[in-house]
Structures are given as C-alpha cells and as structure tokens.
Image (cartoon, rainbow, N blue to C red; front, side, top):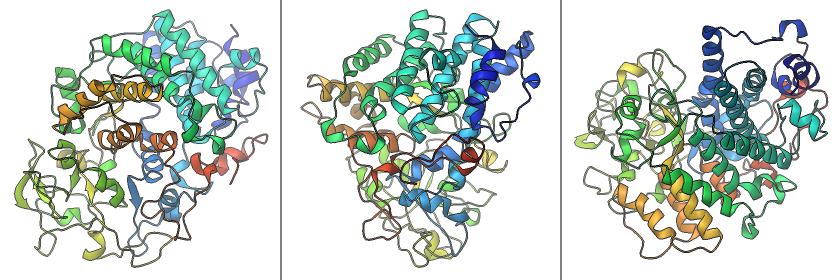
Length: 550
C-alpha cells in the first residue's frame, strides 16, 4: 500500500484536493504520518464523521428536494430570489454558479482526510471506518455529479485511471462496490448501531449503502446519464440487492416501531433512539441546537410570517422569523390520499385530527403528541390561516414570485415532518432533529422493489409492514412497481431520496409545479439528471470539463 506522501503528491493533489479551492497546496503541510495520540485519533475521526453535517443541513437538502416533485421554491416580491438558485433547481434549469451546489469541495476535503486515515497506523477499525466514509462521500458526489474523482490512489493506479481528472461514473460505481464488499467481508466494523456507534459508520451502514448502489446500478453504469431508460431497466445486481436486504432484516437490530412514525423526525429523536424507542435508523446524522449545529430545515419549510403566529402551527410561539422559500407542490400533496394514513399529518393543511380534509386550514399541533388539535392557527390579523394547495404566481415567473403579503405567504402547503420547538429555533434556527440517511423501512421497500423487478413473488408482506405500521390500507396482492414508487413518495417524503427515486423510476422529466412544459423557464433535458460542476471547481481543475448539457 502506498504511503500517505505518495498518495498526496501523485493522486490527491490532482484528485481529491481537486475539490478544494486551491490546488497549490504545500506538500510539506500535509501529514506524512497521521498524529497517533488518542485525542488526535478521536478528533480526526469525528471530523470525518461530521463533514457532511453542514451540507446536509441546508444545501444538499435544497438541491435534492427542490429538483424533485416534492418542493417548489417561492420568492416574495424580490425576497428569497438569491440569484435564482432555488428557482433554478425547481425548474431543472441549474446554473454552475448556483449556491445550492457549492459543496463538492467539502466532500473532496473529507475524502482527503479519509484517505490519510485509511493509509495510516490508526487502529484497524478506524481505518475501515474511514474507507466507508470515503465510499459514502464518493457515492454522494457520483449521484449528484456523475463522473467524479476516486480518492483511492491505489485503485486509481491499479486501474490506470488519470489521477488528475474525474473518473467515469460506471467506474466510480464499480469502485464503491469493490470497497464496500471488501469492508463488509473483513468484518472490522461495529454492529453497535444505537449505542456508542450511533451516527457512525457500522457494518449495517455499509450494507445499506451497498443496497442503494445496487438498486440504482443501471442508472450509475449507463454509458451516459441521458441514456438510462427506466422502461428497459436491467440490473444484474438485483439478487445481490435482495441478499443484502435479507441480511439487514435477519440481523434483528431494526424495526419500524415501537414509536409511531411522526416521532422519528421530532427534535428529541436522538433521545428516543438511545432509549430504544426508535429502531428504524440504520445510519443518521446527529444534530443538536448547541453542540452539533447546521440542521435548519424549519427555516425554509415554514410559514414566512411564523414569528407573528401565537401560537404557531408547531404549538408554541417561535421567536425567529421564517424563510419559507420552499413549499410542498400540489402533486406531492395529492400522493397523501390513503385513508387513515398517519403520514397525512406530515403536511400542514391536509387533514384535521380525525383525518377529515382540512382544505388548507392549518391547525395548531400539540407539542407532545405532535398531532393537530381543534385549535385553528390564526394569521397576524387574527383570521384562520388557510394555505392554498395550488400555488398562484403573481409576480415574476422565473423566481416563482407569489407576493410579499398575507395572500402570498399562504401559497403552498407546508411540511410538519421535522417538528420545530422554540428552544431550538430561537438559537439561530438550529434544530436538534437528527436526520436518518438509511432507514429500515427503506430496506423493506427496496427489497420489495428488487423482487418486483426480478419477477419474484412475495413482496406483499414487506409492503404491508409499512402500510400496517402507519395505519394505511394494506394490499391483497403483491405491489406493482408503480405502487412501490408511490409508497416511497409517502414514506420518505422530505427525506432527500425523492430525486434519486424519480430518476430510477423514469419520472424525473415529468411535469409538476412549476416544472411544466408550458413554462419557458422549465428544462426537460435528460442531462439534467445530474448537476453542473461548480465554476469554482472547474477553475482550479484545468483538466476538468463541464457536464454535458451545461
């Protein structure tokens, strides 16, 4: 295995540091031997584990959610236009200077650190954990940008790849598979999911990541991003995907309950995981309003005039204002149509506490039960706050301008999923809600999908576990692929996987608000399945070229 010095000088300076803002890094400033004190090991590992935290807490969320059919951007008479970065995502009209895409550098730096640790004299488990995190960060880059650098200098040399350039997406997918298979087979990772290793890479996290890679294998290995065709989906990895799902299921570590669905996403979900009442999280990013900041989804998802609501829809007064530049699309709202489904309460304005249609009326939710009460939320003038499912653009279409007044503020339903409390929101709007990245529910539905795609029977029981848990009607027969696609849209709403699902199922070029074909701002080119490389990344990597279509 190459030493750190060689990897840094030969590969990483032109490869993983390719994501940094300056390639002119003094070799002498890099570690030739990683600091080996216990404090240094712990600090470097924690840094690696949390590098994605800030990006996940805002920009990754914006890029993935706004480019899917879950959310649209809104602006308010010039407020929250922000260089059209949000509207560009909603229209698939991305620009290589958009702020929502300004984070490849962060993952590149994380992979520099991961490679240093993987090739260090750190304890063996730490080295394997670093490799998992490198595979995870590379997966995120590949999913978002297609061709990306492989930060493993040994692999690059062995496969005669150009160390100074991005590598073909199919090659990156094969590298991630190889890494994860080796890591899992070595059996050096922890299996302590909910204790000390909560939020850290475990054996099950590696398996879940490989499941995601396998179900999307035809997407990632297509000869060009625009040439993937969902109608002719062929995947030689389906049996491997099913086998991995079986291993996760048979581990006995995970369950959909015992807490009810809505509590999984509350501001106290850290405590619930550690108390053993949430067993659904295979891998999650921990947040805390004081000690692990960066999760600010309530700011963008809320009602713009929320500071004038007393109480707010979250059951108490919030003493910070709302940004509210993201609203749920009417097409997304329409998916929540199953009678008695607890997930319907994840959208303000959809149903009252008895599952009757609320027709946009926002009810004050109880801070303990997280359910709507009989109390109607009132706007600043003391009138019932009634949101509109259909969104009326009164100003500039390019920025989805709805006007900066009471009428504009009530455009679009809002998510209640990541419940906000004032104790968090008052602290710079930093929430304490942990964000699950891989859930057991996803393993159940992915196995059902893999079975359906390979013509295997018996997926009904997997599917109905999800439905029964949330109180929704069960199926009498095995689900179709369309059933599974729609169910994923309900189960993982507002959890950052919708764009990924839409591409795999062939719906990323569909129409939804405001991504309509009669809208001159909307783009339907298949090359938009991945994002443009940021201008700053191109500027410091002379050998890189922009993604096709940009």
